[in-house]
Structures are given as structure tokens and as C-alpha cells.
Image 1 (cartoon, rainbow, N blue to C red):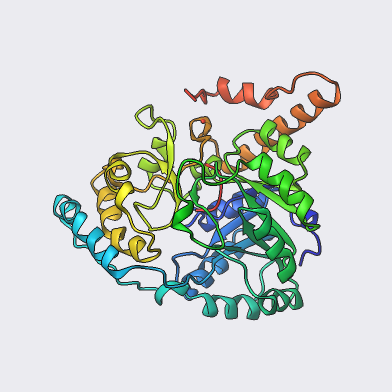
Image 2 (cartoon, rainbow, N blue to C red):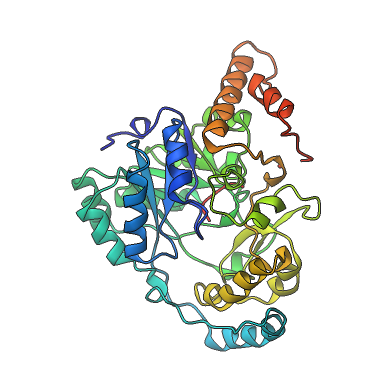
Length: 385
């Protein structure tokens, strides 16, 4: 089991724990095997489903890996607001010929948290990280006793301090550029808006002055030169999500992968449309039509729209899917995960060499090789989904 962040892997690259089937064992094994740190996403899975994926992953790699848990969420949903949103989605249900249902099959708003903790304490994994809040000191101390390294996601310096005070080994600092759900410790609908959230470089700098534990930087990172920037700003490692979402090992739907560089999707927005919690995704028809009216009601809205999202995927309609993506999505490269790790490291080395010589950092020889192999892109995911 690791005793320091630098013991986890050879390279300072973390694959984000993208939920919804994206971060499956094949992807995690490929990233960890290549020298990065791969992460399974336990969110939206049963405790047994998480355990089965851990067993499968252990059969694919002997390298360190992580498991990400969603923290239990307080019941903030306004039932009337949820029912109003249900009525608004009636047309979608008719269009996709699928019923709306807000029943949570995973035990309510706690996502099976206690059962997952019990499994991970009984059969420890190298790393456990947490999203949507900070565990108690008792939980984090329990993992320390079994040798598991712990990381807590934070979106502000105050949240990072809470993680340190609770006994986390490291903090994953998530900038507003990140794709998927923002890992805020408290969902505050009054903070919604275009000015919500801090950019990654500013946030890393603030957190480095606020805490003494190591920092993992996440949010819109797609190139080795960007990794060099966050490392220079004080991060110990960089976490990438969208960059790995398009790899062959990713479990993302093919429509989702293709949308990353599809010129039809020009920008991303934070929205509550699909889940009731702020999450960054590509702007499509569903987001435009329903985002302004979605209530702050996670995970009720997530389960309410689940059937619609699945139906849209089945019918090949990307306009009705949750296309989580970071701001750098148009720079996505469809490389095998292990090769992507090597390309990123070549770019990181080139950027460091350029900075050391006083010149301008470039993409490095691997980037040129990628374009020669047909991986040119018209333009550019980031954090935990």
C-alpha cells in the first residue's frame, strides 16, 4: 500500500473516475499499467457491483489503482419542484416512448455509501477518493489503519482545508473547467451562474497556500504542456477525464466519444438538466431546453431522467444524452489509453525542457507522431463525472 502520493505511480497522471460506466476496469488497467494512476468509479453502482469491478481489475493489472465514492447527499429536493420538472419532461417521455421514474434503485441519496466503505475496509485497495463532500475523520482514519491512501475532491480553498482537517492524505482540486459533476461539498443553487467557480490555476495557487497536503489538479487538462503548468503552480499530479473518455478502453457510448470533436457541439455549460446538480457538458437540445428549469434536486433528477438518457442513446440521438465534457473537449485524441499516457509524458518532458532552456514549450515529438497517424483535430474532458 502507498505511503505517499508519489508512490502511487510512475507518472504524475491520474485518470479521472468518470461514473456511468466510462471508467471501467479495462481503462483503469491500461492507465495504471502505462505508469499513470487509474480510477474506478463506484458512483451509481451497487456495493456488489463495485466489488465485482475491483475483482475484474485485479485480474487485469497488479499496479496501484483507486476507487472513487460519492458522499451521501442531504435531502434538499423540493418535491413540488421535482414534480413540476417531471411534467415539463412529459414531452421527452412521449418522444422517446419511455416512462419517467424517480425511484432510486441504489438505496436513496447515500449511493450505498456505508456498504461500499465496509467492503473497502475489509478488502483494501491502494487509493480511495471522495466526491460531493468530505468524509468524517473516523472514516479517513479507518482507511489509514488498513493502509489505503485517501483523496478528497475540493472546489475551494475552504473545502481543501476541511479535507486536511479531517485527515485526508491529499486533495483533488477541481477547477470550473472540469467536465462532469462539480465536486462541491455543499450544493448551493444560489451560486449557479456564469461566474460560479474558480479556474484551475487560480484554485491550485489558493489551495497550495491554504493546506500542507499534496494537491492533484483537475479541470480541462488535455496536453502535457498544461500538466507542466499545473505542476509548476504547485500540484503534485494532474487528473484528466475527457482526454481518456475517447480512448478505446473507455466505456463511454460511441455517440458521446464522437461528440467531443463533432463541430455541431461548440461549447460546454454547467447544467442541472440531467441530474439536479451542476455538471459540465456539451450544449445540446436537452440542455438548452431544460437546463434553465431544472431544480436543485440531486439525485432525484438523475433518476428521473435516467430512462430518457438511455432511450436517447439507444436511438442514436446525442441531442438527448448527457454529454459530459470539460472545456478542452475539442483537443481530444482517439489514442489507446496507454499510448495517450506516453504521449502526454513526452509533451510534459518537452514543456519542461523548453521552460528550463528559457524557450517556448512545444508539444514534443509524440504530438507530431499523433498527427502523422491521423489524429489531427479541429479544436479540444477534465474532472470526475
